Amino acid sequence: MVIDLKILAIESSCDDTSAAVVRDGRCVLSMHTVSQEQFHSKFGGVVPEIASRKHLNSIYEVTEIAIEKAMISETTGLDAVAVTCTPGLVGSLLVGINFAKGFALSLGIPLIAVNHLKAHAAACYIENLGLSPPFLCLIVSGGNTCIYDVKSFTNFNLVGSTRDDAAGEIFDKIARRMGIEYPGGPFLEKMASGGNELKFSFPIPKLKEFDFSFSGLKTYAINQVKNLKYSDFHDFSASLMFSVSKYLSDVLICAAEKLNRDQVAVAGGVASNSYLKKAINLECKKRNLKFHFPSKKYCGDNAAMIGVQGYYEFISGSKAELDLNVIR
Ligand code: KG4
Image 1 (cartoon, rainbow, N blue to C red):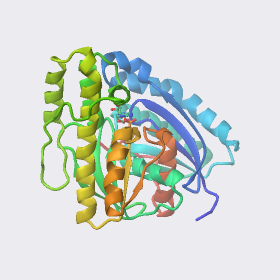
Image 2 (cartoon, protein in one colour; image 1 turned 90 degrees about the horizontal axis):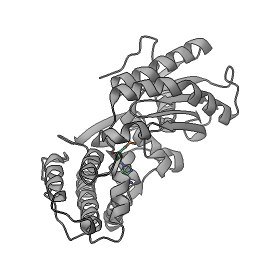
Image 3 (cartoon, helix red, strand yellow; image 1 turned 90 degrees about the vertical axis):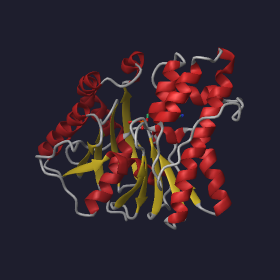
Image 4 (cartoon, rainbow, N blue to C red; image 1 turned 45 degrees about the horizontal axis):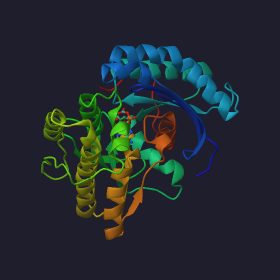
């Protein structure tokens, strides 16, 4: 539906400060993101206090650049402001929410509250113009691993989630034990290239229906690292990528079959992993399921996806008030 609605979107839930301007929910006019990775890497993960202070430093400039790149007028070109309100680090979310409130108030335009996880699924719409619900979406990041049944653009049903660690989090922790700074996922993927996927095996738990558990696998892998020589790193990383990808893919496909969905998607930071996409794609081909995923720039935390989901929330009548707070 084209109504020429331009939304300024703000994302600050973790360690990326991002702003975007999105037209009619599918067209990203601009996006600008500043990553804080360099400030957190030596700590092995995101430090909440540092994250919120860095968001404060960059949010104004990031937004200004996004508006400039969209080539629209700051005062007359925007129709609404969308902002992530949950889930995430409270201090980080508060920076984005308060900035968005001030922006919306000063321009007299509506404010839209967006759920970060719904937005990850919405990232799949940006480059797949034909995609519309229903579909099942596996969301895998450093903080979450879950499967949503996306029944409509705004109605999501959680069908499974991790009972302990998230997949990205275990990659970061295992890599840290291998001497690698945060984030470890991209390093493990590179290290896996050309390695033997079957050399090492990892314990994969079988849980009720579509839940995941990664803590046993993480502890087992971390203990293994102690006995590895550097020359084993290729095979170890390849086996880890293969096992985790197969685990995620098996549960997703099983859920799609049980819930009778003919299209599946993967989103979130870990969705840029080629092993994961290959594993899901293989199973989808066997079953004639359609498979969707965002390109790399829309996998990790980004404001474009907030603008996309914000659009669908807005046209379905959802509007936030100025007392909007972080939803824990
Ligand atoms: O969605 P995201 O950018 O941020 C949040 O978790 O909020 O995801 C970051 C996570 C980190 O754990 C990182 O190690 C992982 O995604 N990650 C990857 C890859 N790229 C990022 N894991 C495996 N393979 C990758 N290529």
